[in-house]
Each structure stands twice: as C-alpha cells, then as structure tokens.
Amino acid sequence: MKKLGSILSWGMTALAGVIVLLLIILFACDGDGDISRLVWSEEMIEEYQKYPEEFRVEYIKVYDERTFTEDGYFSVSKSRYIPNLGQWQFTVRYNHSTLEYLSEERDEEMPIEDDHFIFALVDNEGTVYRDFTYKRVTEGRYTYYRLVFDNVNMRKIGDIQIMIYCLDDMKGDELPEIAVGKLPLYYSELEREDYKFEKELPEEDKPTEGFLPDEELLKGR
Amino acid sequence: MILDSKETTVAYRCPHCGAGVMSVVGIFSLTGDMIKLKCSCGKSELMLQYTKDKSVRITAPCIICPKPHSYTVSTGVFFSKELFRLGCTYTGLDICFIGTKDKVLEALKENESMLLGMFEEAGVTSLDGLHKDDVLDGADDPFVDDVIRFMLIELQDEGNIRCKCGADELPKYNFEFVAPDYEDIRVFCETCGASVTIPMTSAINAEAFLNVDELYLK
Image (cartoon, rainbow over all chains, first blue to last red; front, side):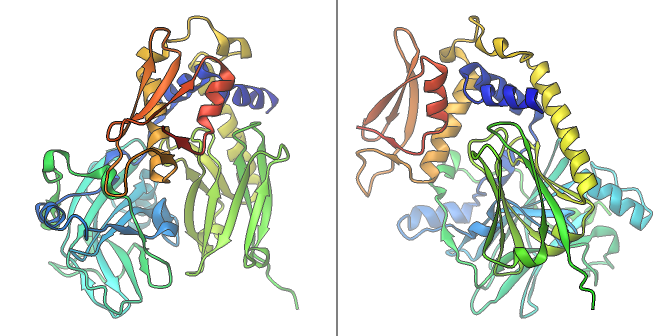
C-alpha cells in the first residue's frame, strides 16, 4: 500500500508520470469513446441550420455519467433531449458478464458478437415508443448501444423508462411482457439543463453515419 | 423487536496517497443529506447522496482523471450486491467498490496489484524512474497532447476558460508548445486571439496545470 501510495503521489506530480498515465489509459481503454457523441440526423442538422439561436440540447445532470438498472446489469449514460425534434438519444451499456449471467439463467448461448436485446421507451401513462435507430459497438469488456428515439411526446409526462427486452422472448413483432432491464431516462422532478452541444457539431455538416433502424435487430433472430 | 438494518461497505482508492478508503454505510445514515467518505490524508473524498427518485448517487475520485465520476444506482444494487464495481468512464479501471466487507477488501487488494503491475509495465519501478532525462519531448509527444486537449475540453465544458470573445462569438481553444525550448504551453483562442502562456519546466508546474480550475486568456 505504501509503495503504491508513493508511486501514485509522485505519478501525479511529474510530467513523465502524466505520459505514463496516458499510456495506461490507451492500453486499458474501456471508455464510451465516440459512441456517446451527439448523433446528428439530416433533420437535426436542418433544424439547427434553420434556427441556430433556438436550437437546444438538454440533459439531466444526475443521470448523465452512468445510471444502473435495479440489478446493476445494464446502465445508461449521456442521455440527450432535443426539444425541437422531441428526440431522446442515449447510450445503453452492458458488461459481458451480463451475458454470462443471462445465459446461465436462460440456459441458452449468448455470444458477445450477437445482438440479444431490443429496446423501447415507456412513459408513466403507458405510452410505448418502439421506433428507434441504433449503433452498436463492442469495446473491451462492454457492448454499447447508442439509441435515438424521435417524436417522444413530453407534454405532462411524469417519467420515462428505457425498457430492455431479450430478442428471443419476442412473439413475432410483439414486445415481451417481461423486460430484463429498466433504466430511468426522464423524471419530471429532476431538472433538465442545457447541454453545451457546440463541441459536438456534425463534421462538415454531414449526418452521423452507421445508424440502423430497429428492424435490423429483428432480422437476426 | 429486532430491526433488519441494511448496510453495505463502500471503498475507493485515494488518487493522492494511494490508500484504500473503506467504510460501512447504513440505510438510515444514507437517508440524510449526504455522506462523505474522506481519506485520512485529507485530499480526497467520496460522496453518497439519496436522490429524489430514491436512488443512490455516488461521486467517486478517480485514480487517473483529474475530476471525480458520478454514478446512480438503485438502493437494491447499493445494499444487496455481494460486490459491485464502478469503473472510470474513460479507462474502465475500477475506482469504487460496493458490497460485503470481505469481497470489497478482496477487490481492493486485486485493484492494488493490478495498478502496481500496470505502473511497472509502463516502466515506473521506482521514484527515480519518474525523473529520467530521456523523457519524451512534450512538443512531439501525442500522449501529452491528448492530456492537454482533454484538460482544455473539461475546462471549456465547465465554462472555466475566459477570453475576449463576445456573447455572440464562439470561442475555439487550441494550444501550442512555445519555441525555442518548447517547454512552455501557449493556450489561445482562435476566434479572438487571446492567449496565456503556461510554464511547464518542472514537475510542480505540470502538477499546477493538471489541477487548474480556471484559465484567463488575454
């Protein structure tokens, strides 16, 4: 403990230590990285260019870094709300140990490289939002889904939850009755603040690439 | 009547002295305003708060990053898991452990071994190793560039860089190493031209820069 303490305290004061730490970061990186950057659709770019002064992106600070499900197996981070479009976008993440746990519980193989989950938003009035676009990235010990839901009606809503279902539990096109995870997205008593989106403007005014419609998740079954 | 009191053990590693800081937290103490777990060195603390939606918000210092990280977990996760680890958003390294005392202690020990191994692999085997003369020249080192860029983004996000830009101008910050010795860094705004030069000639200067809260460009 003392050796570590000495190394750490010197490591934070020496420029050489800064370089060493960055090497460690690069070698050990499991971070969200680019997956959690603001997703720009053509519509969003158009809206921003037409009304740059009124365009806003909001977020809930308490939920911003990482919020977990009741059982800790899934988490959500970097939720952003774009009022001009009624759009929510956020990143769901799970550790690959989640797949091991579910695999054992469900007695089925769940390879890391496959899609296993489908998502929906549900508000306190029971409205279900099913249409979304997504991008999936696997890095280190985690798989990330950046999800974008449009046209979410926020009027008089108390709360919105992100529901996570197993694809294999679906009957045809119907969502299963039981979700494997629920995450808070919005809670009316928590303040929405302005997010400084200017540092995440679209490159060369082009939409973010690589996003697929939710139907793609159903194709793999 | 015997009350079934919920309690759990929370631990983190102090980024300043390296000590593992551990404490038992009970559900009744948590329903107050805020709990702080402070390191005996006095330079770091972990905060626990009960939120309006009945979750637990944890703000934990990070071994690697200059700023702490925040997480929100349910009371179920907080009090009922045998071991739950929270990792740094950027590196994935575990920075906080919650669970039973034995499991948390075991996890802290594993974490210490892993960190020591990583430092040694990176060439830090003794204090002398951190003061080598053949340290990479900061001006050519992309890793140092990344640290500085990261610091500027953090400060800008928090509104803690001030320059001469007006309310309707969008500041754009950049930096360069200053010739001829390339030992100082000049941080400047590409929009208004304001700048500040920061000396980086010693470990003390470097530490001061890593801990800076605000930058004023003139």
